[in-house]
Length: 237
Image 1 (cartoon, helix red, strand yellow):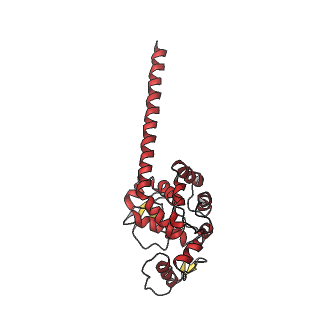
Image 2 (cartoon, rainbow, N blue to C red):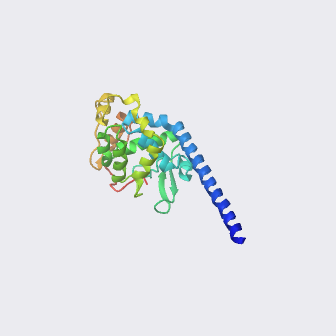
């Protein structure tokens, strides 16, 4: 009799667990879909400006920010897990990640985070080969981001690809805004013919100012020329 009661109890418990997991999974999926609807236009805008696949932008934002629900994302608007690094002059936030009290970038708005994510990738030579890929090649982008050191997680590529596949984010990459443009060089040539190319690990503040003005439509800095060393080991996570 006790055995029968135990069987019935554990059966109900199992059904309850399965129901809870199913409900949680459905809730999580709906939150991710809502996040995509809210920010996909920002991703499309970044794709049009910098030739980064919108699918990859959204997948990274979902992964890095926990679709906007992580403690870091809520505290800083940082959607891409980007740490401060030497060149960062904005607000910062100390957060335990790979190590204790690591410095992360803090933004006034989520849009600022999307903009800075593009600048982060465009301005670093180690990501330069990705901008030669076709805009629809999100697979190579996901592989390349991991290989270039954007994240330390061993399955980072797989996670991005799973997110893209689960929510059909690759459809975003087919937007008409980039019709006829295959590489970032094509995009840059059409938008601004005196674009400068960032190379090596050193560039002056004058070059940085020109880069900000020409590529990112920001006001150039007025500081004197100064060589700044870039950190090869830096990565977003």
